[in-house]
Each structure stands twice: as structure tokens, then as C-alpha cells.
Length: 314
Ligand code: CO
Image 1 (cartoon, rainbow, N blue to C red):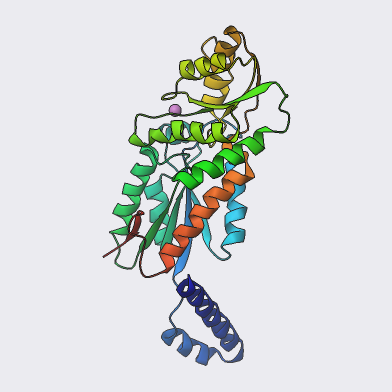
Image 2: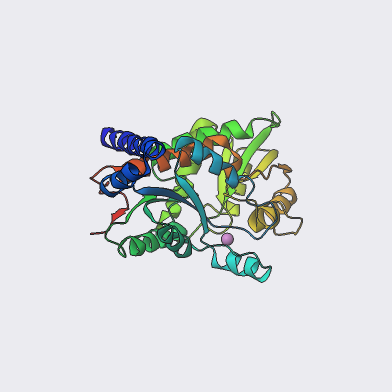
């Protein structure tokens, strides 16, 4: 931490000195430029799954000015992990970068230090694929340093913090008799254990708060069973997804008979929905920003964190 601050100060001092010298005497400035070591360019690559729905990324895009405010002077770029989403948008003439494409562009711009910040919810398949791509990229250049920023829920502190953030976000507009039900994505990846863990953390903050998943465990039937056992009559239904896309609009709140809303209604519950994606919770963005700050620190100190995927080209 101290080392990184020192480096930052030295870097700024160099830039300032060069600027002043340049005003005074161009020849001297050229001489100084030869000897002064320019600070390595640093970038943050923000990586999300993506969505082809209009406005789906509005909430997650709010993190960009927050990143810039927290790390002044750092370049910010975006990449999207979903190949399907990138293909759909390409057909509409909208070109989005995959993580390797975005990393290559940053390298071409002379960026040497990059934090790859995952904006996924759990460290599942998308995150691990991204980490592998970042590692492969870091091996390409001797002078490249790449650190990974963890997804939203990456340890038990995150679980507890996110549970409080979720409860706070759900409070406005909650009717007194309403139980809260969030629906996450779900996965067969080992990191899917984060969902029942988060459900436990939620129940500790509010016993009438539940979490299920679209494609994994806990399932719809698990949550319905819990609601029935608790004698719940009314439910506020919300997504636990980074962006507002297909899963929220169809699988959770859609009018088709197989959506969560329709099935809960058919089971006798009174249901209201709030489709604000988790990226719309300022506290959730703060959690991601905290992970980014840690990765930035790992990037700037000599010893990269061993347990975390911080990559340095050998
Ligand atoms: Co999906």
C-alpha cells in the first residue's frame, strides 16, 4: 500500500517536472524525457456478461464514473464475456469486445498494468474463463502485469455485506406482509455453492428473505416450499443479476406460465416485482469497487497476492 502510494506520487512528480521543463526549455525537456522513467500506463478492464436488451446495461454502466473517481488517471475499458450476446449485437452492427480483444487493444495503446475487474455475481464459469484469458494475456509480454478483481460474492464477508445491501435495497416499496424473494442465475460450476450460502446470510438478516435460482440450486420448488412452510402470503420478487436482460424479463417476471411470477401466483401468492438489477444497488457497486481497489493494490505492490489470481508475466 505504502509502496503503491509512493509510486503514484513519484509518477505524478515526474509528469509535473516534465511539464514544467517543457514550458521552460524544450531541449532540456527532451533530455529529461530520455532519462526520466515514465510511469507505466494503468487501465481497468470492466467485464460483464452483456445483454442484447436495450437499456440492460444502464445500471452497471454507472460503475464507470465511480471507478474513474476512485482511481484518477486510470484508463477504463469494457469487455463482454457472452459470445452469444456479442454475436447478436454484431448482427445489428454493434461491435463489443471480448476480454482478449479488449486486452489486446489496451496493450496496443501502451498500457502495461491492467486490473481485470469481473462484474459477475459469483466466481463461476464466466469468471474462471476470464481469469484463464487474463493469465494467457499476461504471459505474452515480459513487462505486463495483470491482476484480477473478484466478482460480487467471493468470500463470507461479501455474503454478509451483500445480504445487508439487498435487504436495504428491497425496503422501499415493501409492503409489511411481503416476504422478499431474489432469483439469481444458478450454475453447475462448483462456485454455485455461493447461492445457498447467500440464502443463509439473507435469512440471518431477515427470516422472510429468500433466494432461488433460474438454472440451479436452490430451485423454484425449494423456495416455494420454504414460503409455504413459513405461511407467507405475499411476495416481492426481484432478480439477483448484474444486468436487466432475458432472465429477468422472461424467466422471473414474464407473463408466460413458467415464469417465477406466474408459478408463484398459481401457487396462491400475491406477487409484486422489482426488476432493478443488482448493479442498480449502489452498495453492490461499492462491493465491486472494493474488490477492484484490492486488485489495484496487488498490481502496484511487488508481491502479488498468492491465493488470488493476480498474474505477473515471468
Ligand atoms: Co443464462
